Image (cartoon, rainbow, N blue to C red; front, side, top):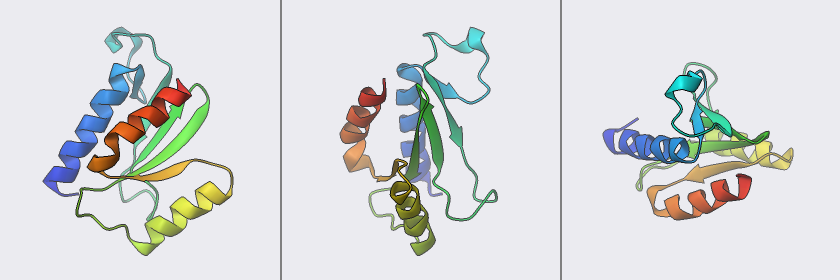
Amino acid sequence: MGQSEKNFENRVKKYLESVGVYALGTPTDKMPIPSVGYFEKRWGCIKSGLPDLHICINGKSIEVELKKETGTPKPLQLFMINQMNAAGGKAILLYPKDFEHFKDLIEGYL
């Protein structure tokens, strides 16, 4: 993951925490507002093609593959996202230019 993608990931995580969605395993005394969900950062070694973030809000899951503006998803990543969506889940590619739409999506889950 390039530096700009890492910066974007940190921006997404900071936003999630601001609405009560914390990293999985965060102690409750470290949560400034009540929790409504969690996110889990996936590392490439877990399973190739899985999106970068698994987010659960009020019992509903969203899978998010983060890309910098010039990033291109790999065919396996697109296959996994399509398979998740075909099964009735919610999986998205997220570019920095789409961050406001992402926040709207999250607001719908809150």
